Length: 341
Length: 266
Image (cartoon, rainbow over the protein chains, first blue to last red):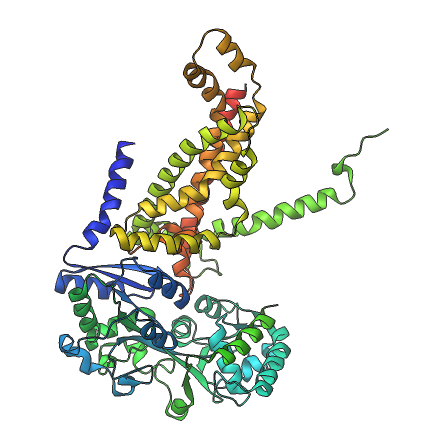
């Protein structure tokens, strides 16, 4: 009992400590933060970073909007950044405190959801495309037909990631539209095509790094970094960029308006904008990071990997998913619901 | 005439066995693969303790485990202390007006989906956190206690309903005060119910994901939310190892309960 009291007292006290000097509370996606990078930051600055996990943009938004949770930094996805700004939950950065801000790669500096990167510093970016095991299907992997019009060899062996936005964007582009389309006729076609393809799918699930590597799933709509990790374990796994259009996404770090450890947060933001530190983030989760010059510090198996370096011919086929209009969102949700039945 | 028995229905054994298989095969798979030597979850690479070692050495798992246990212990203690008098008050008195209201009120969390109190508590506690500036574990303990109270209340009440009043009446006949009767007669007889309630509460608290995810402040990862956070990235057998340890803990608690109550019943 006494031990329990002491343990409780210590735990109850952690928050009091958390607001003292030299700490930082990062609210990030689970298993997404390189422990080596955190150790290096702690060694250089003496600031102890506590990472707390979330598993969706919506959870993070709901918690921060309610307030009082005690976080300093959050890592929203591109299509959520505008919402965070409009709701006044994150603050504009004082760029004079971020000398490394200039390291942000030019193509990532003027993104339309945060022109000039006044609110966010890139964390990692990646693509949602196709992964195929080439021992089963040796044809073209750079197409969404893999899951929309599955080739005979792959039927019953395909997984589709349960990410509504990504899957609907890929499907809409495959049918010739733009993500977040409000065209009812086109969205009807998208729905019918998806429902027609679904019987050929095996599952709608996460965890494909493992299942692709062990040949349990032969094709999947998935994220490039996870497929790179699968490819390193099983060279038969190949990543493809659908030529009809694939999804580009980015997660970036933003400073919360009610952050208590603002100075520490600036140090962290500046730290991750330094190429060698950004490379550590990439080495952990295997995604690119949007900091110019970080490639030189990346592990050798990432420098030329097709999963990370988008081939020239597909570069203009990548699309950010914008924040959809309510009408477009309604179509998307309705199709997704039909697909889940 | 032969009495009707459900066990004599055709296909009973088949359905029963199928039920057990469906319930236990996934758990057995989980336990088996926690001893997998390979780096993957789906192919067997020989027997190994490596994932137990990995989980044991993982500081995030350590702190989450301690936090989970502390929260569960406090939630259990407070729930039982609160639920016992409620159970006594709703069974050991003449029926009174509002009794069924108390019953419903106490048990409402059993019929409400977890997300509802989770969102309500998120908003309420967020206001409290901002107002008081205190962001500690007490919120999680309070939330788990609220979620636990009916689980502690129901077994205690069931036990009370099954206990006849004669021993307590006899104690009163022998000039025991109300307090002495409670202390020396009612509570010892009630102990199995209290233990059952406590164990249910403890296990539920370890298990609660949604409420915890919504109520936790910075740095308050519990084992359940830690595991949730691993899913997208792809989970390793480390999660199997942690789950197996939790499963063992549950089984030990259930056995402890079984033997404790058997001794008392004998």
